[in-house]
Image (cartoon, rainbow, N blue to C red; front, side):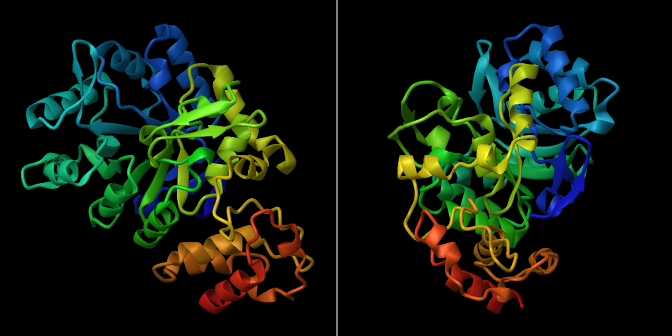
Length: 380
């Protein structure tokens, strides 16, 4: 993914074919639900002041929506708002719905309480499994409703949020899906099909918004045992043993290194949480190094690059991890966008002199020299 702007505190990436410039580190708002109104407003204002511009907003609770509406009042031009079609309430608590009547009511309620005429991204909310996907996408279903809102100017772009590789893969190949929201984190590195899904997003120019970068906070907890489920990892139920503490910056560094990722929406309940996330920009590469955790988890497949750049420095200056990411991104072919981004690299993969230093350093036994050669054949 191409970095297009560097602000005072933030870097921005293109959100796929939407063309929107989104802050790499954006904001999930689920942890603002229970905090006092003034504090929640303060968190949103602080995020905006730091250059964060993309906000995921799926809760339908009236008090929450009124608080967020107040937070964005007078600042709508600085914020990209993402709403969810299919998120509702039952007895005051979140509930997923496929009711057209409920979904339409809550969407119009969103516009009213946020005091806006449109949302920037409207997600088809939380769809996993073939049966539910068919329900959402059928004639007269939520997809058709979303397209009507788009035609009416009430939604600029259509997204899809899900937790399974198979269902999300269907969505990203649909011509009207512009954005995928999907869980990616260190603990889910070895989930089957994840790399292929992200490569398909690149090929289809679908923007990728990453949820659960901290695995629901479990990666940052002091507990050594991490219990994962499909909601957090997109890879089913499993346990991992954490051998040393993991930082927010390491979690974010891993996610931002992945193919096709546009932005991350970590949940933050305070200004301090945002500062922890933004520390990513001030820390050294050593402090952001995530490779040791993958080795500790054994959450990798030998020979598969995780773009950690432990192979560097290269004597001729090749960014090896980035070059291999370009190779993986071109699983479906080299698009004009990929070619342009590759051509902008200072040193092409074809400059490799096959000295072997990179392979000696790689903790994952990647045949880096061969992969650089393959990248050169594709792009040069």
